[in-house]
Image (cartoon, rainbow, N blue to C red; front, side):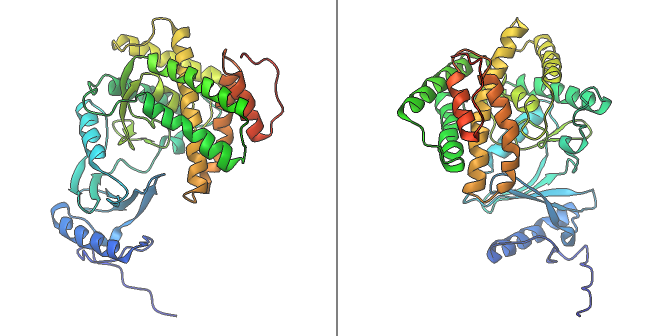
Length: 362
């Protein structure tokens, strides 16, 4: 047996970090050279680099210790990831009072970025499922709703892309392509395709009629960090200007944690009251607002079903398949509740082999 390797010196910028794998040796060498270059200015311990997290894209995040605390390194290969939106939106959100990572160094050509560290405690890790009245849940969701109102108050129409009909429709199209056809092997009849087209038109009409604000686009328990100030907000690079209910639907009908509908409505009222007080363009009637919330959530759920299936079948990230049943339940419940959505409810049932239920509203 070989003796254990001596620990890397904190001042050795070429030290290899245990547990960090590189599929491309050339990229590893480029990273180590970049890290060596930024280490002196930030007092980093290059030998402490370890995995922090990854996401559904080609980005991954590493953590490195330093004299002034831990820092995060974003590894985003430029052939696959454009970091410019991340930097631009980070500045926009910070200026609006959101707690987001500060960009400390950025090698745009190579796709390496040094960021402040918001910690490793996600909302998901701290929330108490099934106990919406628990103090920690009330505190965390209250903070998240406050932050969401601040985010939506930012004047960002000229700063981010529009969440327009074309983008909303591209997202919906992930559902038949990846979830129905690829994941469930379901071939739609001509009649079903026509019904799906009509349903998508209804969903888009609702979405596009809603007032528009800055939209984070993935505002949920894995992208909110328990931090001071709370919450820390991550994964905002895909922000757009679009329907006001979108981020609330992401938060309250989260793909990774389920709350009973009574709790969703309670938090929804809390948001609605905050938004009205802040002068945001929410409907004056909460019932009308909640209907828009449900229809916007349905668009997101169709997209998420497609994305989770694509991540599994195209990218080999099969862990997301375990979250499909919850997203399916959200979508199916809404489809059984509103006029015009009964055909989509039946397609969802056919995909999952669920017996047809009575009471559809076509």
